[in-house]
Image (cartoon, rainbow, N blue to C red):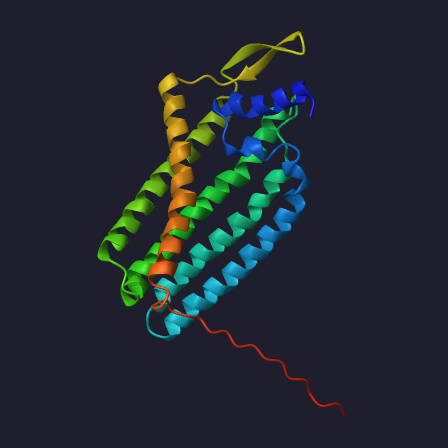
Length: 250
């Protein structure tokens, strides 16, 4: 990618939100060469996970571990997760590296909305899995009580961080641009629209972004691996039977 194009691409993110995040590493070649395949794989995984989780919830209801109301709430959260996770791949349709186009800011906003909804889906996922665990599953497999309390604190932190980020996204979109910044690109002086926030705000945003990565990625994977290795003999197993039968020909 040409240096000027790369600069414009990076500027679109930093000009609106005043910081860049992990997305800038997957918006450029060669990462974009693998995006179509990864999108297909993502949809397949989301579809299988949604089906298996719904069957698990219904099996727990049939076994008396969940009442109908709780199971319906978990199904509602599950549908939110499936829709927001599937919608996430549409972020690849709007690349923000649009240079000086009058639609550059709009493309950046459309590029961000799927990611914002993904974060809402992760909150819904964390709440539903915590409700399922605290509702009896973690007791049945013998997990320590501090894990249940810690899961509630985890959900509260994730809700707080994502809630703050949603409010900030809307605010940043609504006030853009608050100023213009001068740059020199390929020897040419240009002036580009941008937002400007207090230094404290930018520091808080970076801290929350790192905190979100820890809460959304590291802790769930760590908890899953810990339960698998420490409680693998106590885990409940879901048995799915499927059969086909052809009618005899006449």
